[in-house]
Length: 220
Ligand SMILES: N[C@@H](CCC(=O)N[C@@H](CS[C@H](CC=O)c1ccccc1)C(=O)NCC(=O)O)C(=O)O
Image 1 (spheres, protein in one colour):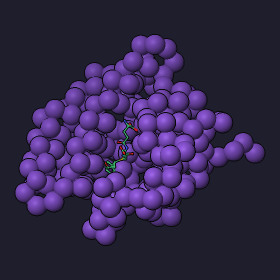
Image 2 (cartoon, protein in one colour):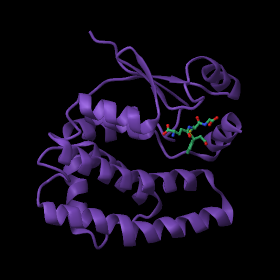
Image 3 (tube, protein in one colour):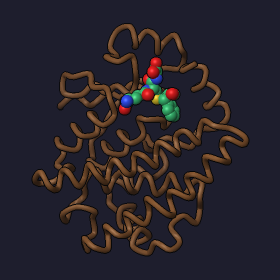
């Protein structure tokens, strides 16, 4: 049996969650090795982290870092990166848009007080006036069940992940976006994604105060 990918990160979402989503959507089982302290991360930095950063994924004899490189490797390997150059470029273009919104959500998750409120205002504004209108328009003009071509790609997996993350902080985010609402229902019912959304999967929960405190300690 081929070796399963091994994901090196803390036990939380951060920048690794999109990689978990993509592997799960592709039906690929993976292992996780969590570090819990600054010292454990320091040891990884001194040995296997090319840029002293995580995520790091051991896959196919490689120790990959940089989220985009990891996502693109997994996507291409599992036919989730389009059938030609044009499709690949559109998939990466749409993926970059969702990564910008998820970056805002990640920063929001580690902020507190007034700063967090200001970040929420920014997220609300950009979700409703920039990102969701863009994907609604793509679904309308493309006229298929998926954003590119007629099969699931990295872009679709990142968009469903983003929609669910946005709804955690803005519950009515999809109101006014009927095609995105239908997209969310379709994607949530794809068997591999349905399984990842069910209890007991490796999907990580919203960080609670205790885990946020530990993240701050690990990366301080
Ligand atoms: N270009 C790279 C960037 C990777 C990257 O920023 N890795 C970070 C951990 S993730 C971050 C932790 C807090 O800042 C976080 C954790 C939770 C939420 C949001 C961010 C890291 O390893 N920091 C150690 C160091 O830089 O010494 C990539 O695309 O992979």
